[in-house]
Amino acid sequence: MLPLTLIYLLQQILGGNAQQSSFQLPLNNLSNFTGTTLPNPAVLSIPSSQSSNFTITVALCSSSPQIPRFILSNDTSITQPSQPDLDTPNVFEVSLNNGYGNWTGLMPNGGFMSVLNAGQTPFEVGVSDGGPMHEIMDSYPFLGDTTSNQALLFSPAFGEASTSNPTYPNYTLPAANLSFPQGPSSPPNFTLIIVPTSSSSLASVPRTACAMSSVRAADVLHEGPAESEGLWLKDQAGWRWQWLVNGLTPATNYTVYAMQDNSKVSSPINFVTKSASFDCPIVHSLPFCPSISYAVPIQGPSLPASAHDTTTLPEEFYSPLLEVLTNFTVSLTTFPCGRDMYSPIVGCADCQQAYRRWLCAIWFPRCSEAAPDSGDSTQKPLSALQAQAPSATPRSPSLPPFPSGYNALLPCLETCTAVDRACPISLGFKCPIPRFTAKASYGVGYIDTGEEGDEGGGLTGTAQDRWGNVWCNLG
Ligand SMILES: *[C@@H]1O[C@H](CO)[C@@H](O)[C@H](O)[C@H]1NC(C)=O
Ligand SMILES: *[C@@H]1O[C@H](CO)[C@@H](O)[C@H](O)[C@H]1NC(C)=O
Ligand SMILES: *[C@@H]1O[C@H](CO)[C@@H](O)[C@H](O)[C@H]1NC(C)=O
Ligand SMILES: *[C@@H]1O[C@H](CO)[C@@H](O)[C@H](O)[C@H]1NC(C)=O
Ligand SMILES: *[C@@H]1O[C@H](CO)[C@@H](O)[C@H](O)[C@H]1NC(C)=O
Ligand SMILES: *[C@@H]1O[C@H](CO)[C@@H](O)[C@H](O)[C@H]1NC(C)=O
Ligand SMILES: *[C@@H]1O[C@H](CO)[C@@H](O)[C@H](O)[C@H]1NC(C)=O
Ligand SMILES: *[C@@H]1O[C@H](CO)[C@@H](O)[C@H](O)[C@H]1NC(C)=O
Ligand SMILES: *[C@@H]1O[C@H](CO)[C@@H](O)[C@H](O)[C@H]1NC(C)=O
Ligand SMILES: *[C@@H]1O[C@H](CO)[C@@H](O)[C@H](O)[C@H]1NC(C)=O
Image (cartoon, rainbow, N blue to C red; front, top):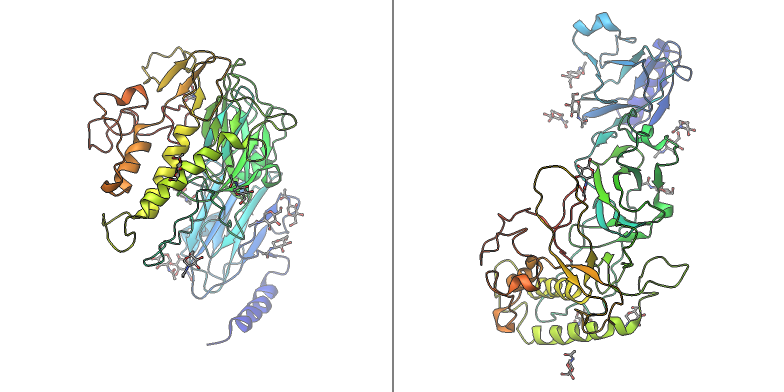
């Protein structure tokens, strides 16, 4: 076998002679072109690989009446593949669909790609040995919550949450005042594109990252890593980027896309901002309650902060929570964790985690409001809202009364049953029984049916959906 570098060199010489002016596409790095920056003739040469499949993707970077065509050959004797060659073996058309095109196959000797009808339409090409560089991902951004003019948003999850499970005899559980784990060292970059759903600014633009990121319209927000609040491990789904977006319009439906490394685009979600009178601030980025990312009935932070985190949230609001959690952890470790198994699938660490999530969801009530009547005839289930009178006795022992009335979005009963399922029976943790008392303090029947012991089969199957509906507070 020739060393790879030598093969490469040979190809440079051989290929280079045949195709003096062709541009060598780099591997695993995007290149962009328009008709004027393409070489003449408009042929791009593709590197070779003896061992792996290449995925070649193209993405159009603007809408245009003139759609380029891409014809590819992995036979090095066909140096300028064109339309008539499509009948021959080893010549393929990379056809476009909504601005995207892809081809996967072998390039043992490299190859060539002709661009026909290029015009002035900008486009990108990516040659990769690690899957497509351009694609619409089947992941979604995630909505934390909204106020009248803000949204707390997350990228799709990417890095696994590293779980170092403690083991017997040194079964040490995380402290109540959790020290936040270190995030992944080279996370993918994400940028959010946020646009009012009714806007036409993106209407004619292909759903490619290069096309969407080049739209500069007053109603299209671009939120990159620099605008973010950094990485956050909200739950076991994994790490996400987190953004607190200000300056939105009340009672408005927005569409959000997340772009990964400026080349891949997520599927979109919707969210709806609250009405102008909504006055609960968002609370987020609490290491001891990592799942709290929603509006809470407390006074807002002083300016310039526009939402609460540990730097603005009064300590007396959460120090008793840490005490409860510490005491719970002490009781939990009276069980011989890691030695005696109370379940084949869960252990004490899972129990503590589920309890923390439940306690935080109970401790910090969530404000919401009824969805405006959309006027469509399809009956939507109603969210688990419970009206709270102005200055009513707070639902939470350490929060002061909230002077204005609000609608509490009740925790999903599943947040409680998760604790029941993850903890040793000897702890005596009990959730209210769905058929009797649960509805007074929980959203029942959304995810699970609400029949005791049943999992799944609920009304909505989820606590919140991608259209911006939020049914109960999962915490
Ligand atoms: C990708 O291309 C850009 C511009 O051509 C270059 O600056 C960068 O170093 C390349 N990255 C890699 C990983 O080769
Ligand atoms: C296109 O590529 C050139 C050089 O590789 C780079 O300088 C330029 O920023 C790229 N343009 C876009 C829109 O990505
Ligand atoms: C290339 O892809 C084909 C089709 O997906 C697959 O059957 C083949 O095993 C892959 N070859 C390599 C070397 O990865
Ligand atoms: C590749 O192209 C085919 C045909 O257009 C399409 O069905 C498929 O979804 C594309 N794959 C990706 C990853 O974009
Ligand atoms: C070109 O790619 C196709 C699809 O991967 C493969 O079947 C064929 O053998 C390749 N041709 C050459 C000359 O490598
Ligand atoms: C027990 O585990 C904790 C955390 O993993 C560690 O800090 C501690 O040193 C360990 N103690 C012993 C006696 O191994
Ligand atoms: C919790 O931990 C943080 C940093 O680790 C510390 O600054 C804070 O004082 C602790 N809070 C309590 C109530 O122990
Ligand atoms: C993300 O963006 C930063 C700054 O723009 C850059 O230094 C870094 O290389 C990017 N990371 C990736 C994986 O593209
Ligand atoms: C936690 O436990 C200590 C010691 O048993 C007790 O004094 C304290 O009241 C408990 N705190 C809570 C909030 O239960
Ligand atoms: C937001 O708009 C989309 C698209 O019109 C719609 O499907 C969705 O139901 C709306 N969301 C809410 C919560 O009304």
